[in-house]
Image (cartoon, rainbow, N blue to C red; front, side, top):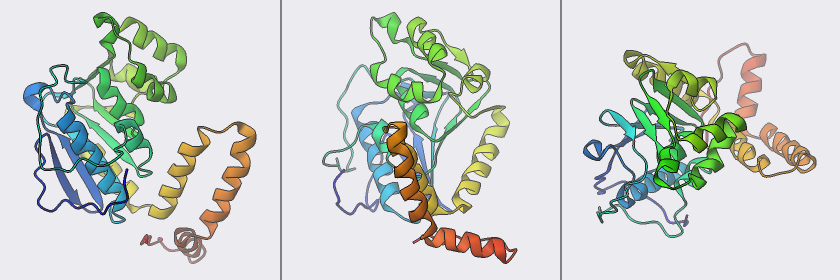
Amino acid sequence: MSNQKLSLEGLNFLATKIDISNNILSITLNRPEKKNALNNLMMNELNYALAYAKQEREIRVVVIGAAGDIFCAGADLRRAKEESNVPKLENADDISFSLRRLHKPVICKIQGSVLAGALLIVTNSTHAIAVKEAKFSAPEIHRGLWPFMVMAGLFRVMPKRAGLDFIMRGQPIDSDKAEQWGLINQSVSADELEKTVSDLADELASLAPETMQLGLAAYEQQDALAFDEALPYLQEQIAQCFQGDDAKEGIAAFLEKRKPTFKGK
């Protein structure tokens, strides 16, 4: 991603909807007539919105939801060319990198089934809440394909044996199984989804934003390090954390027996 200053002013998002309220950026996948399949237009708008969220300090949490009955059916194999006036970023990250390198909480609000490449969004978000009716599948093997890109995130959240069977057979699992295997955090009834996600987003947005970003960046970095490398790296991060305004406010509030007020930079 380039260092250019991003803005939402004057932009017309066609494949997604964008809303910002109470330090929370909400992105809605908005191609219900195409089962919210990921085409180049939607991917560009998602990457731009996530880059904007990374840039803006007042945005502390991102929620990704979807319109219609299907959360996302994966890649749009028709590849029809569509364009909006949302700029294409130079050196734009893959959606997996955009999510993991955002270093802010990202909640998937899953109101319907998740198929194939849509698992990239779910597995690389920090949280996922789904309705009980949702199904999850990686059906690529039935089309003579293999979910190579999905594996990178999938095996970071699911047990390897379960995840391997999931992609080898291409059979759907329900939301209870998805929760059991760690693909999602929680399975809820449809009428509980909105409140459950809203409460979680509000809670995360109220927590120390600088420390949250520092911690999530360290979480991503230590994933690529051997144990002997991770320990000294994480010791450096602890020292940096103690020097931050969030830690100073949190410790002072604890000693003064009051609720902390985290302002961020």
